[in-house]
Image (cartoon, rainbow, N blue to C red; front, side, top):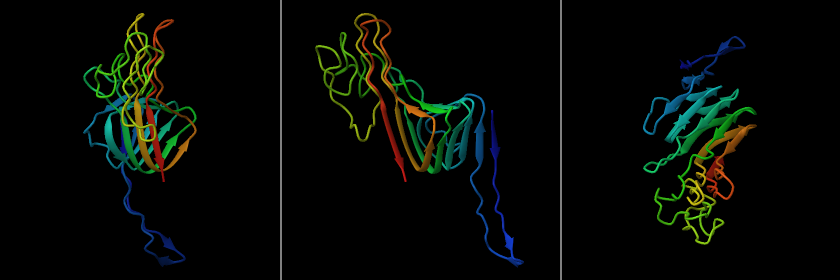
Length: 212
């Protein structure tokens, strides 16, 4: 499922002098190669180096890693919201975030269900043919309640209305703070299209990326 490798302290002898250029014991390295779920409150991998290689790592809630590398068609995501629970990617990365060109953080269509909005309630959500939004008219006659902060998103995207079949699900939520980042792949939290012509789309979710 994954490999857990431990780093060890190393002392260097240079120019014939035993110097104290000792590298402190590093974090463990966890390489995921099959689909894995890390739940909110699971502290198994805290402080470790995480490599997602060619599989999907589904993660929920706040976690702190030493580094995160998503490589070779790897995907990091969070569970899709239900009508009783909402989820997010919420990571603090002490060192580097790497997303290779074939890899991704994918939270599209993982937000609030159709007609649901912030607080995971239908109160203030999209009705009729209205699309989901973070406030105001979402292509409909009635406006959605205003919520969240565009500069500091803390909630997923709202779902679309339910008339004319089925509206789309909102986008999810990704919040990452990292010391440095190399992003050649993608981070997406798009809302879902309606299922047929005239069906309303879900609102986009939120992405906040803080890099030192």
